[in-house]
Length: 54
Image 1 (cartoon, rainbow, N blue to C red):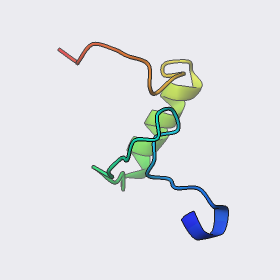
Image 2: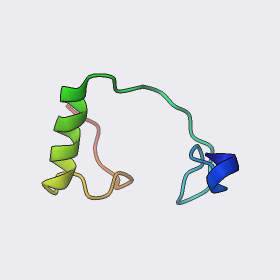
Image 3: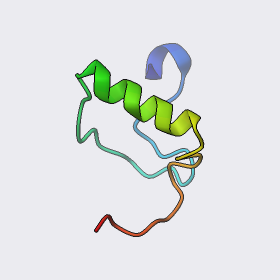
């Protein structure tokens, strides 16, 4: 992507800090559930500060 689109997908778009890939989602059901959650307004801003889960 870096060569073709001239963007680095592993740099934070907000601060430019390097990011690491920590997981791959391989189960389609999980991916669809996450997408439905975001589309429903349950996660508009992935960078929004929030408390850790309890």
